[in-house]
Length: 550
Image (cartoon, rainbow, N blue to C red):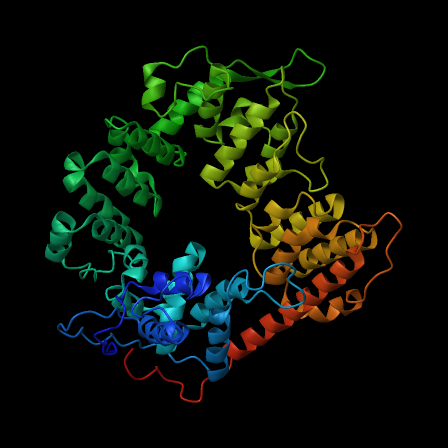
């Protein structure tokens, strides 16, 4: 890919912002770069902008003559089907907020781009080379797009990022900082990169080895651990979350004595996620001493006696002594002990009861909220589905807000520890009981596309709100989620909701029109998503990888 020739009187390569400013202010108030004031200034502005646009789209910043870059690497993946390639160009051409104000019935194409990328990556396609600059520009503006966009862009994204500083994020986001990792079965190359590489390269190397051989990654880390900076030790230690197992315990126990508080806290958190670790056993003893079953009351009741001090041994095991503002010290220490104790501790401690039976027990002296919240954190950390299910309770249970209730944020985290089908069923039951006003966080953890029962529960709740004349903009977030997450096959079932309804006397003025518009947009978006999937499932006539360089 060669840059266009640069005329002697052309503006500097970084003059794009000046061109934009001149266009916004007008050439009578701001002379365009590379031009002169007068009647020809508008023409000069447009000509200069046209040249600059070509340069920007070329993917290479113009500069003085130098050695040409090496050719772009080949991408062996199959080429996109033509219809899917045209669709990608349309999605990338859309701009967030274009037009502003009322959205009307047109789909938000930029919000469909993440789903399109996920599907294309699942199918294993490569992008048309000419779309790479726009794809990288979109990823630069939206960090949530970057993982999928860079996966789809493939090795040529790194090649382009080395040529254009606007896309330097691709080097940082690529394992190894954009540098090719050595052969992981070549100990000499691995050792050299680990000892001499940049920090990003070393993180990428450690992560790659950890994903394949957890023990080898841990052993590599031990070779330089004492000489690493505290902030680097923290990042390296965090990579051990992948493949965490009992074999990591001796190393993590040593890290409990680290001179950095953050490193000690991370090591303690990782050890508490191993129910068989010595730290988990120590925490079980401490937490068990705080919780007991009181049989002197009419019904068995959990009694709590929070610790009266945070000693040095507790601090070494990750308990933070200083409580946040507004929290009592004893309840702060108590919560940390319970969340770090293995959940298997409590059945034996509380009369052999199941998680569901334990959660149903009353708790004395208003300790239920603190105890249940700590159990929630433990269930998430230890990935315990049985405890997550017990703490979630029935979806028809009262909403969060009362003493000891599990908050919606905690429910969302607990739902993540259940299977996708069970998760969707629970959220559908919650919506059927409580409506949509409290369901947004819960919908965000459900698998896409939503299952049939969940999708129907959302649509039914929207329809109820519409018939009641509710304020439609209160449901814009859920409607946006539905556009992206409803199964496209649901579109035909929504045709009856497209008409403008009769508005009740107490309805918000104009609400009926907005509801009809929102449902029309939903149907249009679902049909567009169905077309996107069909286009990506169509086999390209060539069936091979794209040819030619970038």
